[in-house]
Image (cartoon, rainbow, N blue to C red; front, side, top):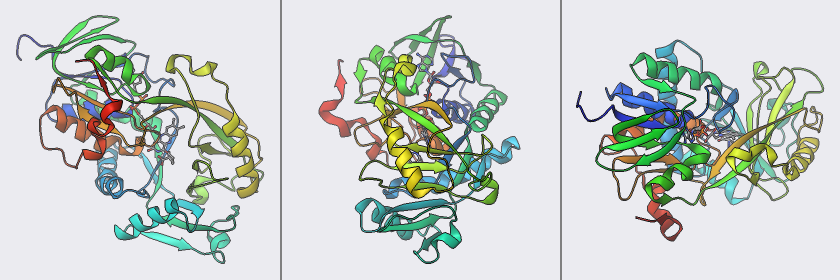
Length: 387
Ligand SMILES: Cc1cc2nc3c(=O)[nH]c(=O)nc-3n(C[C@H](O)[C@H](O)[C@H](O)COP(=O)(O)OP(=O)(O)OC[C@H]3O[C@@H](n4cnc5c(N)ncnc54)[C@H](O)[C@@H]3O)c2cc1C
Ligand SMILES: O=C(O)[C@@H]1CCCCN1
């Protein structure tokens, strides 16, 4: 052990991305510390809750390509830990047949030979009962898509990290990061020195990066996570193999998505892919519910077996970039500070591959995928660097 550092790497933030990064670093024999400001597990960031969608259905090829390997990495973790983290349900994609968004997803899936089933108006209700396909909408199913058990996944990857000798310190907020050949990290409980640092602080990313003179164009929004009651219990249940769904357009506005009833008996999760801007420390003060009005109209129109009024509303945060693509990069002035941020409400399924990529950046290895869609230079004038 070199005498002037406590760790090879310190990862700041134990959400899904930081936890997978720490795990990958420990696998590569890096002495790694994972720091978390809250007591684990917590519900204040973006990675809490029992379920997330996993899918290859994307408009861009690069996400579909990454998901090929990512499914294998999820399965590897399941085997390693002896737990079930994924359940195949399929993803029903619905949207105006001629729209660009719907067609791009269809083309990407077909081009990449992802198994899909195209449904037509005649066989739709036979395959998908209790859903009304809007006039002019097309429908297809991404067969291998499904549900990830999110809370369980987070706990599992953190436990595997510790088994590899990694150290987690929760209830310890990072208050300063001093760049240099050895990075000094100050927390509410102490000071640590490491050869490199990874910032995976979710909605708090810019607050951490400010210590290093960098600000990214990130917007934090609060999502109302709505659960809707089944009129006939079980009709939208995961055990009936009811699929996840993605509606690429409703009333010409943002996507709406949902997951079969699972965590709360008789309640299906359906959310609007947008919300109002918030300060992550004051999340619960934001009370805009205009998205819920849209969801109520959508449920009344497309899901006749659900009561069109949410039975439970919880909160979760998105950290959005202007193009909704992730940020995976090294600090422009300090190559030993790496960050993963701006997962824009769709990053959970990529956790294992994000961990692998951020680990490669820390170790100075050639990244397994082309990172140009994720580099900060794409923002150009929107990235403020004080250094
Ligand atoms: C409602 C909702 C639905 C979603 N659905 C899907 C889906 O179906 N499929 C999918 O793939 N993705 C989905 N996502 C997106 C996915 O959950 C996020 O992209 C992902 O969880 C982001 O993880 P993260 O690690 O970047 O952030 P976080 O989970 O927020 O983790 C960051 C961590 O850093 C900690 N931290 C911050 N500052 C400090 C500090 N100073 N010191 C110490 N610790 C600090 C925070 O406390 C936090 O724990 C959804 C998100 C939401 C909100
Ligand atoms: O990542 C996902 O799969 C979900 C559904 C689509 C909108 C973003 N969140």
